[in-house]
Length: 194
Image 1 (cartoon, rainbow, N blue to C red):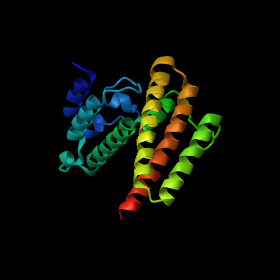
Image 2: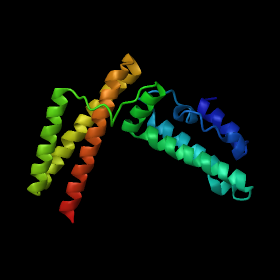
Image 3: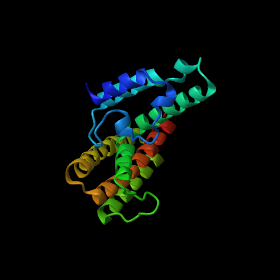
């Protein structure tokens, strides 16, 4: 029996008050090993299984306390799934589990080459937006996705293979910047379409 199916079988027989362990880490919740590289299909199936067992509609006939507990469990499962599904938040969460704060707001020290790259990205985005150049924005988006995939591969190596937590924190901060830039590119493209 896999951890996920064993957890599922136990939860299927339990009431909401017996299922809730809000202190359980997100990986354990879904029967996964805490790692950056995870089986996304397994994560999604575990999430579907949990939601099927704890959805508040299943407990509508029970007491208010039991209904509230099932709602807390479902909310916890939703938050856990969103966290692990996204590479950025999964990396951040793994760092937190290992006692490392990536310091999004406090650690602004970045390598000079990354700072230069940020300035170049910003300049290119500004020029493409000012010129209403959809092709240039699409190309920036493509390059950004490529850079993000490379950072994700580096983060997987840092967290899963070398335990380079300082490097992983730096990679997470870089990914946060690239995600923000991707949103800005998407906003610029949306503005051109309207």
